[in-house]
Image 1 (cartoon, rainbow, N blue to C red):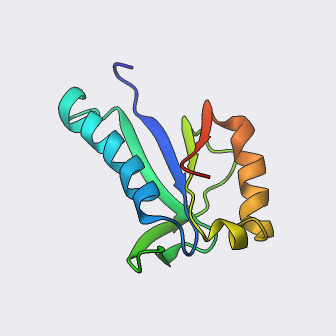
Image 2 (tube, helix red, strand yellow):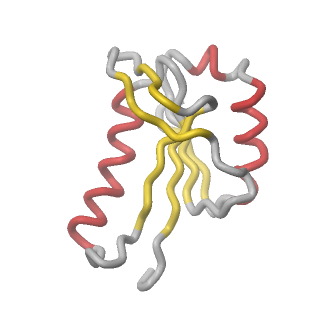
Length: 114
């Protein structure tokens, strides 16, 4: 991985489980802190949502998110978080269309808990 920063995109939605988002972020942040060069982080993590902006987790904590990027943009790791909000999120056509378009472009795709 030397010399390459890999893109990690975490997809969240209202009422997502805070632990799913935060733990995924922390794994990559810890790797960067302990094993990567400060000048060249191994991972660049972004948290995105259908509308961007503040999104409230099931714990009541609102997290700042970015709008969904162009699904053709390179993604190394695509993570879809879990939580009770998934029942509503699976009916969000914009979010589902984006995941369907972005997933085939990603090197790996996973979900946390759901």
